[in-house]
Amino acid sequence: MNEMFEDSKLNWNATYDVIVLGFGGAGASAARFAADNNAKVLITDSAPEGHEGGNTRYAGQVISSGDDLDDLRKYYEDLAFPLSYDKDLMETFVKGLYDIPNYLENYLGVKPFIMGKHPESPVSKALYFMAHEYPEFRGQATHELVAVHEGVADSALWKNLRQQVLDRADKIDVLYQTPAKHLIQDPETKAVVGVQIERNGKLLNVKANNGVIMATGGFENNPEMVENYLGETSLNPIGSLYNKGIGVTMASEVGAKLYNMNNYESYGIFHGLTPKPAKGQRSQFLPFDWPAFHQGSLIVVGDDGTRYFDENEIHRHGHIQDHGNWRIPLAQRHPYVVFDQKKYDELKNDKNAPYPEFLDSVVKADDLNSLAEVMGVDADKLANTIKDFNHFADIKRDYAFDRDADTLTAFDDGPYYCLAMVQGLLNTQGGPVHNSNAEVVDVNDEIIPHLYACGELGSLMGRQYNGGSNLAENLIFGKIAGENAAKEKDVESVKVDANTSASVHEEGLGSDVGEEHYETDDNQYIGKSTAGMGNEIVVRVTANSKDDIQDIEVLKQSESDDYGLKAVKELPKEIVEKNTVDVDTISGASASSKAIKEAVSNALKQIK
Figure 1 (cartoon, rainbow, N blue to C red):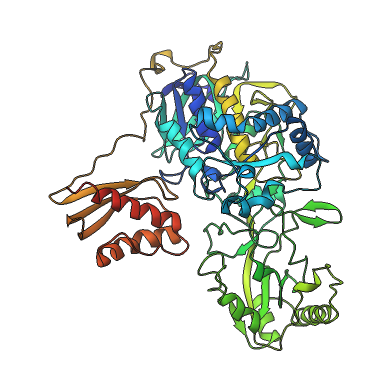
Figure 2 (spheres, rainbow, N blue to C red):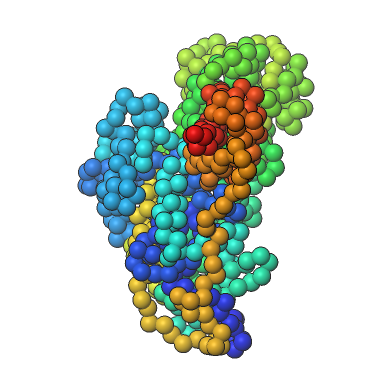
């Protein structure tokens, strides 16, 4: 936005010490530490309230760590290989990993749940494979997963980080539905001195005295960037739908160097496949492993109706074996899972299915010609694929992909079933290059003054990825970015109307975060809970007594649009009908169900 300085009428609508772009895990951490270093901070996010949080909200909530510094160093060197990396940046990261348990205790106020110290915990057992995702690499034994409590995929880390920001509301303003549009850069010094944001349809210029921190996440939901940088046209986001790559655009405008632009992580079944959702919807966050879906008379075929990998192989964040390397395979435009009647019956009755409606989109066909027509593939190729697979099952040797012989079962002669899948895009890693001080550098490796980056926007994660590393990166470099951005800078003069520049402590933009009040009549009580996947759930309960519940109104909620919303709609009615909060959890929405029941219980506790 250098051209903005060409206009002597440029006015600042507000001034802050530090501006943080993006209210996810990295942005929340950066804002908190900037505020703790006496900065007045503005956070802007493009998402509406309850949907901020970026990918941190939707992640598994486990954080990488390890208790041997030398082994951690070796492990992450091997994870990065064969790509080059900034050794000082990597060393800062590895030392941060080593200190994660102390970080959680000192800065987040929790006793860290270190999974390796609780081997009998169901959480530890479920995620043991991810603690050592690359067991053949040097130093892997020390790698550990840490959480803020004994739980996963419940937004617990995100809620803690968000609360750290809310607890500093006197120092941090938060604006939802306020996307950043451009960085404002002094054309002479190249210092980034502010940001242009869009608020209620109006463009505002906000001055940053000390620094701007970009923490806008990746470009998962920007099809053009996905096509240009990843070379793919059929990936579907699993995390935040608000990660649209604005950080990449803004960084490019001010001459920042970019890296890791073609690296991304996937998640789901097989090599990160999920059932194809409706257009514009997030893919389901599925577990790595559903045993019944990896064996028997079941295969996965690509765009031409042929198999393209070992269906029994457990992937590593989408990476599977490729002649000695771990790579995410080229995404098929319309992959399908194909199985027969006996496998369908098995799956339908399997209590370990990832979520209740998993098989609702299955299509049945009486013969392979009809099935091929549904899938849009060549019938002869599909028939030959089934024929070859049946032969491999008979001789107990998969000559195509060496699938475990014990998992091979021949198909029956119809009927057949198929389920449309899509490659899930968990997160991208690319963005502006930053150094160990979180300072962004330009294409000549010169520091761009006053500009910082952290999180998945310009992550140092390269070729291979171990689960929990990005969340650790959010915490480590979010802290570094916040502390460095808060330091007072020599402010260079720029061509603005000084009479309209806002005072840093007197004229901010206000905040969307504040105390909310809810009206009640006789026999009405307000209950709240933060146990869901969204922010706060607020209910108004009408009750003559604790045992006489008349009505439940949900006044505020931001649960997911699928199972979470189903819980919001159905559970209050069921609680009123049965006159008790002791009702069954909505399948697939355990967190949302817990939050609604907790909110109602908290309201009922107020009845004397």
